[in-house]
Length: 425
Image (cartoon, rainbow, N blue to C red; front, side, top):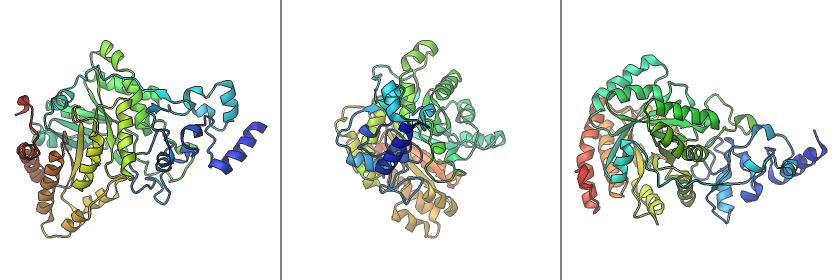
C-alpha cells in the first residue's frame, strides 16, 4: 500500500467520508462523496427516496438528495460506472496517469430522438392514444407460468402491453423474457425489465440484444431494489454494477446499430417517483433520464392525485408540444395482506385516505371505486395512460376495471379539454 494512498485515505476519509473508489468525482458532486450511497449510484438518487431519506438505510439522509440540494449547476452529462480495478487505489495517482479519466469525467449524452422506436406501444404513445398496461410478476419457476396463462386469457383483449417483472423486490424469479413468451402467445406486447443491480455493461447489452432477437421491443430499465438477503450497510461489495441512467445511456448509444443489424429500434423506458421530495429533484431526475435516452416513463404507485398533478405539471413545463409519455401506476387492492405489502414497498407513498378505506367493511368495492376516481384524476391531468398493479384484487374486479376505464378515460379527457386522436376513437 503506497504512501500516497495511505495519506489520501487518511485525509479524505476525515474530510469527505471517502470510500476510496479510486476515481474521485467530488468536484462534480458538491464535495459530497456519492459512494456513501449504499447502491453506489453515480448520477442521482434512486426511486426509493422519500422525504429525503435513503431507501436502504431509512435513518440516513439520501446522499444524492444532499448533493442535488447543494449543487449549483445542473448539467446533463453522465458518469459511467466506476471501474472495480481502481477500487482502493490512490485517485491522485490515477488522475496523474489518466487511468480514471473515463469514469472520473462526465460524458455527453447521445441524441437519438430522430430515430423512431419500432414497437406498437411506441406508435400508440406517439399518437396520443390512451394506453392501458398491466403488471404481471414473473413466477419463481416454470410451473407458475400457468398463472400467467390464466391471467392473459382474461385480459389479452383489454390491455395494450404487459410489464413482465424480473426478480421483483430482489426475490429470484424467471426472467421477464420467459414470462413474455406467454404474453406474446396472446398477441400482446411485453415490456421487458432489466435492473442495473443485476448486470454489468457488456452483460446488459448482450441480454437486451438477445431479447430483441426473441422479438421483444419494449424495455423498462431500472436501478433495482435492494436484495433482501443483503445487509443494509455501505460497502464496496454492495455497490450496484450500474444505475438506470447508465443502462439507458448505453442502450441509447446502440440504437442505430441495432436498427441497422436487427431491424429493431427498442423503446426504452425508465421509472420515476412523483412522491420523492424535494419534488424538484424528482423532476430533474426524470429530465436527466430523458436526456440519457428514455422515451417513456412509468411511475411508482400513485395514491394521491394532487401530488401527481403538480409533479406532472413541473415535468411537462417546457415540453407542452411533445407527446405525453408518462404512465402512472395505479394499485388495485383487494386484500389487507397485500395492502401491507404495498405499504412496505420502497419509495411508495400510501395516502391516509387509502388506509381509511382499508378499515371499512366490504373494502374491496370501496377500493375499486377509489381506483376509478384516482385513475380519472390522473387521466384529466394528461397522463398517457394507466399502468395497473394488482395487490390481491379479484379477477372479476380487475376485469371490471379494465373494461370500464377506457370508456371513463374518454369522458375524463373530454372534461379536461383533451381528445383522443382519430385513430383511437
